[in-house]
Figure 1 (cartoon, one colour):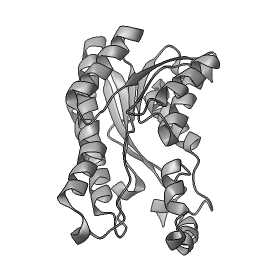
Figure 2 (tube, helix red, strand yellow):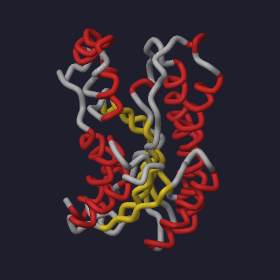
Figure 3 (spheres, rainbow, N blue to C red):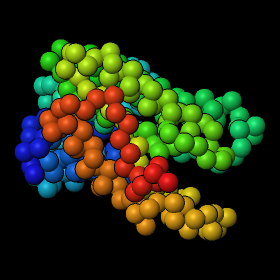
Length: 254
């Protein structure tokens, strides 16, 4: 369905791997001009993969935890493609897997800076660009942990709850100005981040238990989140804003 996002320019942060990479490839497959963004230079490989397949992409190195870098990212997207129609603010980090009282202030601050402030920085500059061009659509990566909590993940749970609130607030602020903002809530997705966790022998039994908490009977694939994001960034979801869309294999239904 190449015309779903035909000629729309879309930023994807955290696009060097995992959900971000898969989403960038899916968006390009739907016809979007994809601005692939990451702090890792391997994001260039993702952009090259898209262009080699006949798609349109450009890589921009950016650290979204820095407001100036987020601003330069949006400026480069406009310079390269002339406008900004959408964004998938996906960059994030996992939890430290320790109880709250053992978290250091530095570990807490880093989670907030990457998972929440990074999205705020991107939103500020993306919204400004979209206001100038007549509107757009934005999707922010939260998590199923944005609606519930698990042990030993206080900083992660807090940031993902914050992403949902931030997304809803932005939706309210800009709904009448043609900008839609939604959050996507993945369940457990088979990404390199999850693989690091799953391969730890200490969590062997827990992984099987966690799989059983997904009524669909398996963990998700990154491209499945990419397809949800594609729909939210397309005109097919024109009446959807301020929503927290669970793509979690039924995890939150239990």
